Image (cartoon, rainbow, N blue to C red; front, side, top):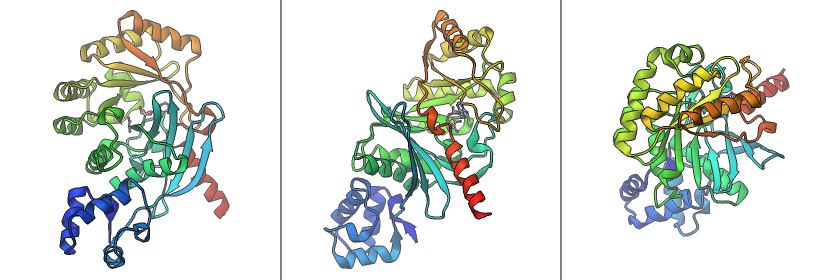
Length: 348
Ligand code: SAH
């Protein structure tokens, strides 16, 4: 059986035609799925019973089950743990900003990129998420809060460009006027730097922001924390980012997790600043969120400010990412790992 939430409106129209139904029905069904977020054909009250039965014989509708919601007492950040149809669990986070609600979604169950500071990758990749599952992360959070989501960041567990086709389908559908209609300019895709996929994405000329997880100012340093650097040299990744920026007219963001004694020297800042200048990139500094298994720690506040000031001195465009939900295990993959570990204990 196929997941009906996976189809674009035109794909759904074709399938409705095959059932000898008028094509406007597809629009109605699409609205139920992507505007009203129903989880069952029986909720589609303006669709005839006969058609609903035909649909449920052929298709199912993805549903995420909410297992846990952790609410930060500091800033109201809500971290969700959802289970998928096959029992796998994923995380998504709602962050409330002055400009609106931003949802951070996962693109895979686990991850195979192996970045040394990241909890999502510790147990490897389980599987890709479908576009319908990614859409459902956003829908479930809107339904839970009753509030509209205005921004999306693909920065949860997983490497989006390692799940390219489904992520592109997701991007098109979430920004589709017949669905949630979220402006592409309000969507950020974060990647560790899979070069050929960055070129492919550039060719689509979507208006999304590309964020590169840079995390090091030289190839040598990048190799310490990011195995992907073995496959793609830093210079190649930067070239791909330039192509993205030229093709789409969008400014790229460099994400830089500042790790104590690894990449936080003033010399690192000078190099980083030169790299950003070449691409007119925006730099987002994130004090590394310590993950027990990884053994990295964050610099103290004074050191972080000195690092930022050095960037500013060299003319960089830089922000320090406000840490959201530090009290609720908000670093990628931490909640899922805790849940799985607890489930293991319960099973024993
Ligand atoms: N795979 C994608 C997106 C998911 S990770 C990527 O690599 O960009 C989202 C961001 O969080 C990435 O920049 C990632 O490097 C960063 N990140 C992961 N673990 C972190 C930690 N413990 N502290 C700070 N940032 C972290």
